Length: 277
Image (cartoon, rainbow, N blue to C red):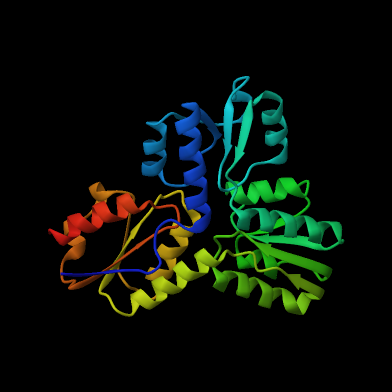
C-alpha cells in the first residue's frame, strides 16, 4: 500500500504561534488557564493539560491572580473584560487572521453595512466576531438563508477564517442580485485555502483519504467534506484507535491529510502505523 501525504498539512501559522506561546507560558508559570480549548484537537489539548493547562468553560471560573491564555479562535469582549479584572497576566493566542476578521467586521458595521458573516454560528470564532460588533450581524451557514432574504441596500460580507471558499463564493453570487451595494472581505486564511487546494489535488491521485483531526475542528470538517464530495472514500479519525481495517480493502494508494490544528507528532504516529500494516 502506497501512502501520499498532503502538502501542506497539519499545524498552520496561527496554531503554531498559539501553541508555542502556550508552551512557553506553561514552562514559565506552571499553571495556565484557558476559556475553552486553546485549539480544536483533543489529543494536543490533553498533552498540554499534562503540562499544567487548565481548561474552563467560562471567565467566571478563572481564579484571582491566574495566568490566562486566550485561545486561537479569539474570545468574546465581555469575557475578556471579566478576565482583565482577575488575571495576573493575559497571553493573547488569538490567530492574527481571526483578529483581521474581527476588525473587518467592525469596519463594515461602523460604516453602515448590513453585516453578514459566512460561517458556523456555534463556532467560538464566529461568536467572538459577533461580540466585537455587539451582535449586530447575521451568520450565514446555509445558502437558503440568502435565498430567503429581501432586497438589501448595503451589504458587507466577511467569512469565518476556516470556511470553504466555494461556499463563500456561492453566498456572494446569491447576494449580488438582491443587494444594491456589496462589499466583500475574503477573510478565509491562506493556510485554510492551501489545505483545501491540497486535498483537491490529492483526491485525484488516491483510492481513499484519511483525514486526521479533531471532530470539533471546523477546518478539518471542511477537508473531509471536500475530499468526499465526488464520492472518494474518506476516513476521518482523531487517533489511531479509529483506524478501520475493512476500510482499506481494495485500496492501493491512500492519501493522508490533517487539519490545521493537528500536531505533527500525531500525524507521524498514524503514518508510521500505516507504513507497517
